[in-house]
Structure formats: structure tokens, C-alpha cells
Image 1 (tube, rainbow, N blue to C red):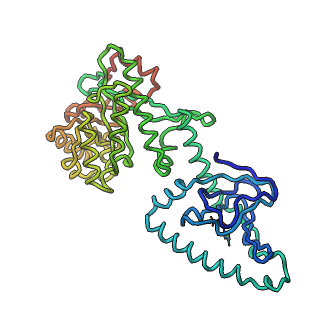
Image 2 (cartoon, rainbow, N blue to C red; image 1 turned 60 degrees about the vertical axis):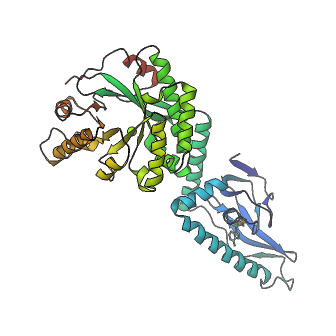
Image 3 (cartoon, rainbow, N blue to C red; image 1 turned 135 degrees about the vertical axis):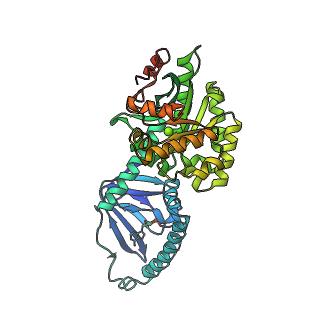
Length: 402
Ligand code: CMP
Ligand code: MG
């Protein structure tokens, strides 16, 4: 359940209760309150976009106050793991800082509650500590975040993610060699959502791991079924850098290969340099275990990020994918041409295959061929297509149309 509705006057939780989630007000008004010596104390009145109930979740303690709906109120639920991941993701030390702030706040507030002026003299039976708040821009963005994260989770559960296939073609002869599987989200309201609109959220919420593996499994099954008795093109799948911090992905890939019957030596895993930066030793171990399965490894988007040559020889890559920003500059006289030439020569000397990404026009093919580039991928050959269109590409040669 991601949303709860409370009637006016209903208690959301009591002071001293254990906690497993925080809340964000979507509609209505929530009073944060405490009772001391029969005096009702309103600590805060919260409105749309405001978060409450986060303290006990963050410091694994009990509710510091009660929460009550003062009018018909709808709240969205933020689970413990969603909240904690957000903080961990920034910096673990942020979690510690929040912990110490919360503990000081708890101390200060319990002091205040025990010592409110007027309370013990019975001069008031209702004290208000602060005026109503809510409805800020920051609140809107918090609401937006939790909405989008819940929606992504729902979409994953509903099987709305599917692979599109973009052909990878031999530069020399223009023949189909393989496909890269690219994730698309077939959203019930938003239509076909491209990865640039959900990958970032997937990484922030940690759901990217499940999305990647779902795409991989579907793509393996679809390609194998579509190819039937014909020679099976290779399949390249993208894995987020988050997979390279532990061994889960190795089991994940092995299970899905077994499930779909897709041959491991026809599968390539694409990763970017960001996967190698955080913990290179661990990433190296994960990569070796993936190779033990018989799967090959491709370094994706080379030329955009660090473009570190040291990664090329320290990590066991079989394929180098040159980013489209480099490839586009080919054919023009200039320094980029020399850079691309050097990268291709280097990669080939090291026994790697080279894929040029972003081959958008026919005039790029001749220089790529002269430089000895193995494969090309881009709009000149084909856009990414859904599985049913991919089937037609298996029979018909993809001409180089140079
Ligand atoms: P938690 O301790 O989990 O449960 C009670 C919640 O009320 C607490 O988290 C905060 O989100 C909120 N809260 C407690 N004291 C105040 C206050 N003085 N002002 C605003 N919100 C508060
Ligand atoms: Mg890729």
C-alpha cells in the first residue's frame, strides 16, 4: 500500500509507537501533537508536501510525538528502505549527522514538553507551539519524487519494461552480427518512455538492478525464440554500475541464461567506466566471474567519461564501444580523427573488437572501414526496434549503403 486516507480526527500514530515508515502529506492537514498532564500540545501543523514520521525511522527508535489528521487527509508512505537509501546514496556520513541531530532534537523537545509555560498551572488545556506550514516548492518536489519512485516500482511489478533491439552490423560487409537490447517503459498513461527518463530514478531507488535483469531475460528469450533454427546473432545488454559492487549479478545472469536457454557465449554485457571507479578491485572480481560464465564484456560509451586508457588494459574487456560524439567527428580533418584512429588501433592491438556507436550517415563507413573498425551501430543501419520488427532483420541483409 502506498497511500492511506484518514478521516478528520483520526490518529495516524501515537507517541512512543515503534515505526516502519515515514509519510508525506498529499492532501489535507496533519497535526503533530503530544499530551502532558491533560494539556494537548500542538507541536506543528503540516500541509501538502511535508514529511513526518521520519525521525523514528532514521534513528530506529519510537515516535517522538503523535500524528493526527485534522481534516480528511491523504498521505503517501515512504518505506524505511526508500528513505535510508536516499541518505546512504548521498554519503553515509549524512546518515550519522542526521542521527546526531535527531537525538539532540529529541532531547530538546522532551525538555520543552516537560517545561512549557502555563502547562502545569492548568491555565491552558491546549497549547500551540507553531503555526501551520506546508505547500512549499520543496514539498512539491518531495511529493514528485515519491510518486515517481512508486510508479517505477509499480511498472516493474506489472512487467511494463521491454527490450527494443538495435542491430550491430559488420562495417566491412554490412551484415547483421548482433543486437543491443535497449530498455523501454511501456507506461499506461505516458506511452513509450525512453531510458533517459527512468534510468536516473532507477539508479537512485536501486530498482535499476531488477530492470536491467528483466530486460536481459526478456531480450534473451525473444531473440532465441525469433531466431529459431537460424544462426543466433549475439546480444549485448547494459548493466548499471550498481551491479559491480557485489556478486548478485553473477547468479542473476546465470539463472536467466539457464531459464531462457540462451547460450552464454552469445551474450555480451556492456558497462561504463563509472562501474570501475568506486571499487575497482570488487568490480574486477565481478567481471571475472561474469567471464567465467562464458559471457563477454564490452566497455560502453568510451570517450564520454574518463576515457582512461589504463582501464583498457587493467580490466578484461573483449569489446570497446566508441561513443557517438567521437564517431560523428570522423571524416572531418582534425584532431578527433587522430584520436579515434589511435583508439581503434590500440584496441585491436589488445585483441578487442571495436564497435562504433552513432553511425548515422553513410559517409562514416569508409573511414571506419579504413581504420579497421569491426562493427557499427546507429540510425544509418536502424533505430532500436520492437521485437516483432527485429524478426524481419534476421533474413534481410542490412546493406551498408555506403
Ligand atoms: P517520529 O518521531 O518518527 O514521529 C513523530 C514525528 O513528528 C517525528 O518523527 C517528526 O516527523 C514529527 N515531529 C516531531 N516533533 C516535531 C516538531 N516540533 N515540529 C514538527 N514536526 C515534528
Ligand atoms: Mg550500451
